[in-house]
Length: 392
Ligand code: HEC
Image: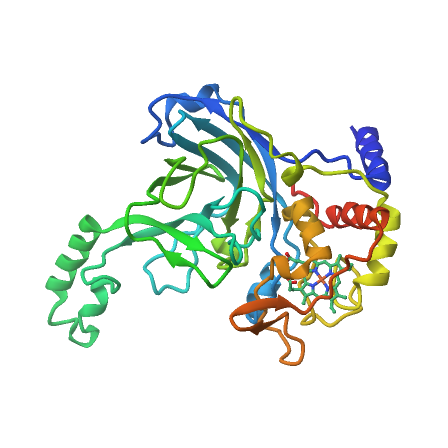
């Protein structure tokens, strides 16, 4: 085993031999309401996809940064089924602690998972919740305790004056029991997003999905099923990309602090390949590292290279884990095509990540369209190696 790993590592130095990730979809019937424990899952082959810590941002919460300082990547076991009308995914991932968010204003964070689908199929949206002109539909499920929202967003407990608690003790107990009965433990949301912080919750049933999650013996299992075709999506004509995320409540994961998959090609039977969108070419990693040091290290931090201050540009330490090659090439030769939102809380006012003119965002990163074809290919091969190891 050891020799095999050594061989793989040394090959990795020559070129990135990673094939792009793909999920083979099993054929099912009547999937509209398929649950976690449905028999249909048993015959479907599971595939491991590595999820990487999103290191693009630093949070101002020092506690969170410390908890997440040495996050590893995590393998998530994924199965997929389609009946031609619906698409369903079953995710299974390890999480040593079951974290459940109690109530909506709680400081305890819940474990959770999300699945995002692109609304455009000719370009890859920014992996962190889409980008301008490349919206995604995001389905989010979080582990929550039972909560009851009698008037929309306030827990019923808050409506009982606690200083009168003695007088109302009996009443309060009655209330609590009623909440336990009436409340549900299901926190499920659907968003349309064109980049982090641009999310709009879809409240009608146009992008309806069924999601569930269950914790058992150190593992979460999550299921999602939705229609292939809807108001915003049309995934019915062939293969399409999909991306996933998981949050760990124990590490106070929230928002951009999560483990993220790259865009993964969902392969349906007889589907058209997404070749140029998803492919990964080989390149000279060693030369790519030199190109990177010469052209990029003045702004970007990556791995142990910290020549630039952390507010200059996104940290690229895990970019090879969650960014696809076509996205990387685009980011290098045409940075304004996809602009990473400047939500870095350590951002410096003199070094914004983008400027806005008449509502259009332009990246402050200069385009590197002058790089020759070999340098670009090698640089991308090097970028693909930037990722932490997968935890065992
Ligand atoms: C002058 C500073 C600067 C230089 C030099 C620079 N970048 Fe950037 N880069 C940025 C900024 C700012 C952003 C965020 C805005 C955006 O998305 O373009 C960014 C974004 C990126 C992204 C997208 C990151 C993400 O999380 O999706 C990639 C990839 C990237 N740069 C790669 C490179 C590479 C490779 C080089 C060298 C060839 C380079 N950059 C040189 C400033 C720079």
